[in-house]
Figure 1 (tube, rainbow, N blue to C red):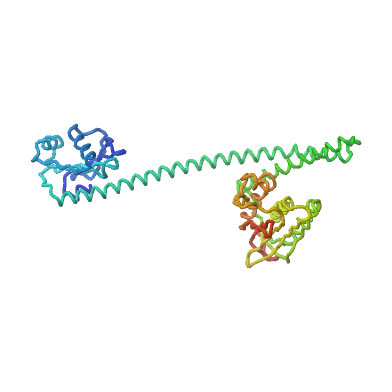
Figure 2 (cartoon, one colour):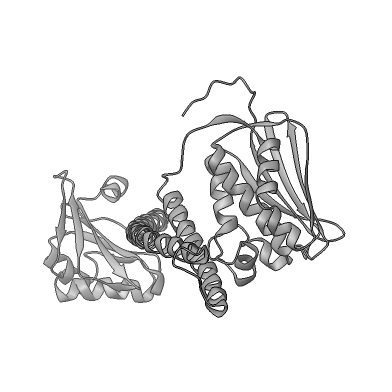
Length: 385
């Protein structure tokens, strides 16, 4: 319709190309109608040949009554004059434009040729942009479909992990209880060799219990079911409690572990924060050599409370640092996270659910510093969910 208005013609047809080849489909507009007709059949052989020639020659073709062969083609389309202009050229042609003057002849001059060429160039760019938008829309739809499928698969996997972990916990806990009772003499005196085997079995069973509990936690965090309860808690007191709870671990390696800091309150779920600190401090114990030192520093800056767990262990290679807080990501990072690749991931999820963060920095001359940052609170702050 723009071609009709610009060139003062009676009709215009657009023939799309695919990889520089005419597709056979056309869109036809006339001055007498506001509608654009879509046609799927090819025009006559002479018109089709003229369209193909315009694409191949990369030139505008003028059909006038002064040319005998052109008069035959004009008679077949019912026009007094016509022009064919490729939009784009050669293999880059995106369409071919056929413009018709049905009521009168039209003289072709340089001015008209320049006007048609400018229109063809502009039309080619418009069609290419439209194709790009269409391709982007199609790609976006495919990406969205793939994302939906991925989300559904993740939900299935999460539910499966949740169900399996939940179902495993009961028999594991029952087995551990029975073994503890046996070791306590509930079933009579056991031979010494049986006692040692039973202790090793109990240890393995408890490790499986911890793994099942960890998987349950991950499933809960992935489904956004983490606790929303937030109350002021003294993070220094909480850190001292966790260090005392893990005393048997760090004393067995002759590690000096202590907490530094004054009273600092954070707005937290205390049980979740205890779990995060247990993971961080136990992780530090694992990676600190015998006779080493672990310091838990609690501090406050403006509205941020920070708990930094420092050790003088082996540190984390630079190549593994980006994966530290990802689940099941990297062998070295998994070992650093407690063996399953989930310990530090859980710390990260707990921190993020509290509106905070967890970061790693190397400690000089050696060792690591894991810093948990959280919103601070005042002791008399009103608890809320």
